[in-house]
Image 1 (tube, one colour):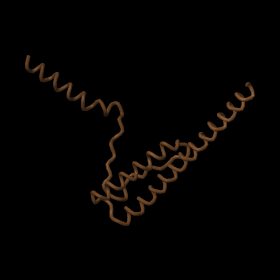
Image 2 (cartoon, helix red, strand yellow):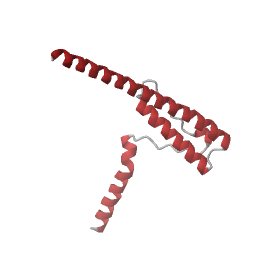
Image 3 (cartoon, one colour):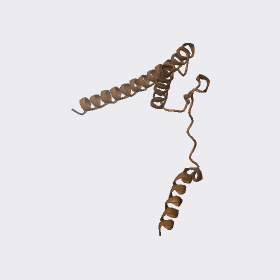
Image 4 (cartoon, helix red, strand yellow):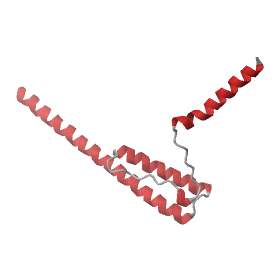
Length: 120
């Protein structure tokens, strides 16, 4: 009885460990050297919100790596500058999109007011 329980527990543990391998879950990537710091690239077809989030995340990762001592000062300054520019570009693009939406809303409101005046 005890042997069968031990075998069942061992099979369950084996299944638990082997499941991700059989399923094909991608391995986690860990970087520790400055050359291997992951640099998320902004895709031209990605929405501005995704670009903004990617840039902010990259800035946070660079800051953390610098504070942990994984990257030195010149690399930190270079990468911080690059990601700061990307974040600003994404913020400006979002602002421009919002301005365009606001202009369309204002135009529709003007049209509705004119139609309301004409109907009176």
